[in-house]
Structures are given as C-alpha cells and as structure tokens.
Image 1 (cartoon, one colour):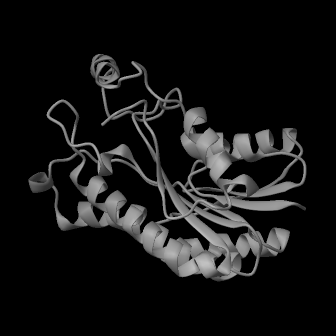
Image 2: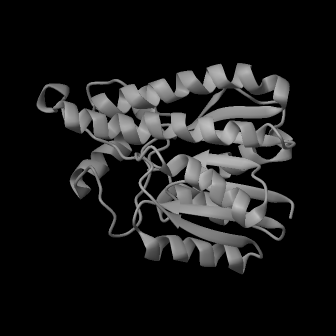
Length: 248
C-alpha cells in the first residue's frame, strides 16, 4: 500500500471530489461523514473503481471523541496514515448580533475545534511516516470582506483561526517531515440537492463578483489538494492556497 488518506466531510462536494481525485491503485481511504452514509458509500465506491481501498466512518467531527476515532480507524484498517484532509465544516452567514453562544459554539466546535482535535490526534502518527501531509480546507470567507460579498462572521473567525494554526504547526512539524497547509476555496458549486446559502438569482450576482466569471467546482479544489498531498509538494508548507477564480 503506497498511501493512506483520511478525508473528513467526504460524502459530497469538495471532500468527495478530493477522494476521487487522489484515488488510484495502492491507495486506501478512511471516508468520513457526519450522517450521510449513502453519500459516503458512493465516494467509497468511486475509490474502489479506481483501484483503491475505502472504509467509511460516521461521526460528528464536533464531538470530542470523533477525530481520534478517525485516526484510529485508519490505523486499525490500514496500519498507517499518510495524508489527512480536514474538510468537514459548514458556512453560517448569520449576522453576529443575531447569533447566540450555542450557535457560535456549533461553528467553532465543528470548524476550529474539529481541526484542532484532528491535528492533535493525527500529527503523532503522521510524524512516524515519510512525506506526510496535513491539509486543512479553509475558505475565502476568512479573506474576502467587501460590500458586494456576504460576510460570514462566525465562519470567518473560525477559518482564520484554522489558518493561523496551520502556520504554527508547519513550523513545529517541519523537522519531522510533515507539511501542513491550507486550501481556501472561493465560491464553489454545491452538489445537486445540497443546501445552498444563496438563491439562484443571488448565485448569478456572485458569479459577477468573480474575475473568472464562474463558480468554482469541487474538482477545481480537489486538483490543488491532490498536488498538496503529492510527493512533488514536499517543499511547500505553512501556506494557504487560494482556489477562487481571482476573488479578492
């Protein structure tokens, strides 16, 4: 077995696209989702079609025990772990003064604490391997603040914190051969039937705010994640890669 991956939030969208892009003969995947078992099994089937192995694990990434359980699942099923893609999360555009502590805690538990706990569980294991990768999926909402672009207060803060942690971990784990990076997608198409933050008319307005004139696709993001997970990216760490069509 050449490479073992753990991808969170992999039942649909960017997570599923990452699995499909990285899968090949000699790869194995822990495919995580909170509750979309059917979607996760679809991702697993796509991996197997390309010659890889796949094991599906369900669990809420916001629960303190889930991240460590995912890492242990990789060790139990495949005996090692080489690449972690921390993708699970959601976007909340609720204005800050309309939120309460419970709603804010949900965002931070899922986005920030989910990544913290996953990194804490995975990094000791990644440090034992070679060419190991920890990749966080961030978002344009931590960078783009304009009158014509919706602000996502809680998500922006949580994703910005994730990126700060990425930079710190990159320094800490560089001597151990583990690279730590983030990928920040811009406005990205959802899978058919998935929850969307905007109406169709609003999406048309969004396209006009993107210099390349279109929404990104999950495959656009997966292409960058695939490179960051590869051996060719071994001299890149502590970076945030923007896949956003030129959105400023």
